[in-house]
Image (cartoon, rainbow, N blue to C red; front, side):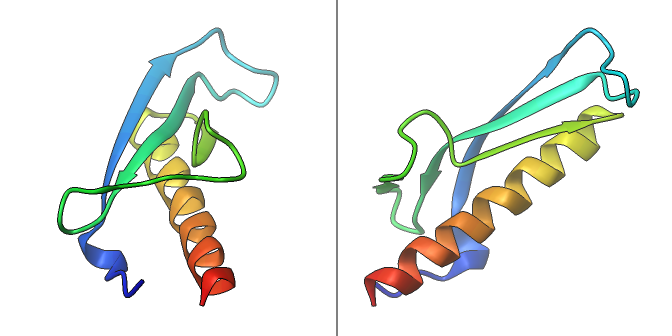
Length: 81
């Protein structure tokens, strides 16, 4: 499967949470990843989410969750090849 990682789309949700001890007050999850054709790429390791992160801001949590998801996707696809 030749996936162009720059063209994948991710469904990411961010929620404001009670501040954690480190100060983070946003939680983000990437729940779905779609290839450039709109077909969902299933995560065999965790059907609940691809990426998860906490952050001090909405954008920080969102970005970190998507970075984690992208690394998992790359790892998953490289194992398949």
